[in-house]
Length: 295
Image 1 (cartoon, rainbow, N blue to C red):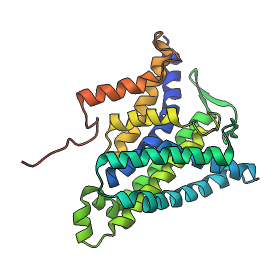
Image 2: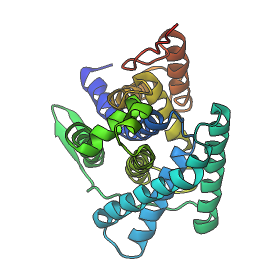
Image 3: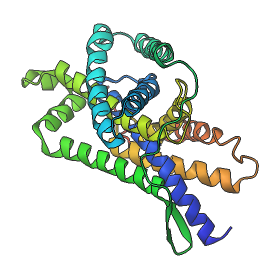
Image 4: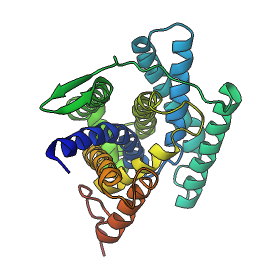
């Protein structure tokens, strides 16, 4: 194992981890605002990828299709919260799980009905070639993914930290009952949270599509890695979800490269081991807050 080879694996792991971080952040956004683990998040991202593919196939440039897709996904996420989630608000956790699982199958079937289950190729928006520094090669595609995800994370940080909408969202996440008492429309904030999660997931889905063959089941593996990232970072920590995604991406890449027993075939076991280890050793995740119950 050379230093150059190790650094090469780190770069590739960060690129993959950026995709996992985006999906994990979408999971965390919904969980923070509603307490729901959205098992359909990957399918919503997949549907957004198909929307982007349709726009590009109709002649729209990719960098014009991306913001249009994000806007449509944002509106769709808000609509799902209003039509599907709000009627079962306050229901037992098992009911909410069943609803999101049902949404998973519905979105998957809808995508298959509209676009079929045949594999489709998605154009790569980044130029071919790579940047070479000190013997380490970084493809423009990998650097582009990192850049796009970094921009999305920065915009979300600015939204939450410096805007009145972000303040309202943080208030609802901290205590929805108190937020309602001071005049914040909790229902509108919850819908906004679902919209933002759908938009962030759309970015992850669209960036994943050129690396995978576009088909209705394409995001299943990515969702598993995203769950591992959210579990590792903490389901109540957006920053932890980002860090967890990068860690999972690097861990998966290094395990596949240097552990012969894993190789490329068993890399899917890495996130499962991470989930199990975190739940056993630190259930709240690396950056999550431990639950405190008053006696």
